Image (cartoon, rainbow, N blue to C red; front, side, top):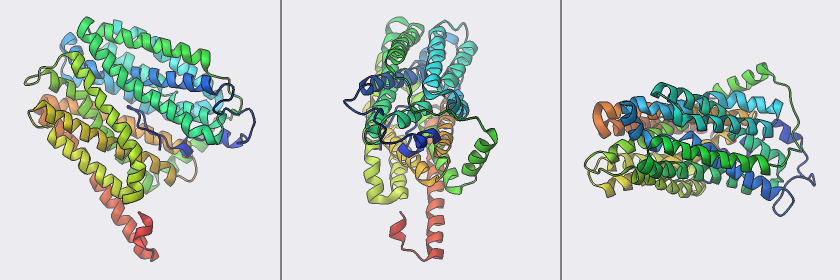
Length: 435
């Protein structure tokens, strides 16, 4: 299982393999492999693309208190600078992933990154909060063309034995981009203001985009296919009519609602009394994301020991405990709570996202894209609703929202456990075989 990304959906390997990849010969001598020509260039290019994508996507999250002060906006209003970007990505990931089947993965990634970077250079000059939100929405929509296309490109161009390592490097770029972008923006904002901080993120993305453009090898195994809206609609409808897939999509969205709410609002909590932390320190809090890499990697072992639903129960319990711990008035307790929330979220997200490809027997790329859509819609909802709850009831309001979402995950998982038990009883199978 790949390591956790910072804001990116964990895409299971077989979910990333498109139809054109199946047509490519897995033993083709010119497919990329470690030590061979082009592999290092490809790895560096996609690592840079991953950094740029998630540094841009969450560029305002660590800056929300400063944005609020600049525009005299509430936490709920400022949170839309994050929610608009993730919402734009959520709405566009499925159509752009389908369009890449026609225009090509490399072309889609290049265009997406170029548009997002140009907007990233314009964002610091937004004259009003409305303009900032609008630019961020377009930026998120542009970025939607990159993650799914990158996974498909790797599946088509890299030898199967090297594919897991190649995808791991891309996901590592996501993680580093999401985390370092928040930390960089926090410290720059403390010294020169939030607009300069967003400009620094934009320049970082420019450098990464140039590396990507210069280093990415040409696609050799992509086979264009015609767009068939009816076939796509049929596949999507089939996935949405599957009860287990619907539950997995809901679990991903609800987990991300918790995560989006907590990390959108935590800056406001930490800059206020009794903590009064400076902007740079608040940005550094996102180092807690490293815990997600560990818990995501451990999710596979948890599933092997506890079963899929058992791992979800543990993730739910850990997240809920973390939420309650953050209610304490001591900074150490709040940070410990963030560690538990992060560990529980990434473990649950890893289990749910990897289960999507296991459940979908056809149209796995579309099944994965639907999960990403639900995931980022959860991020948008969590960021906005968490800020509204904070405005209405303080940090306790945000925690209450998080606990409500966790309760939703618990209810769905309990329902799935009961449904599986009933199915086993009808089939007369042994329960231990169907964790």
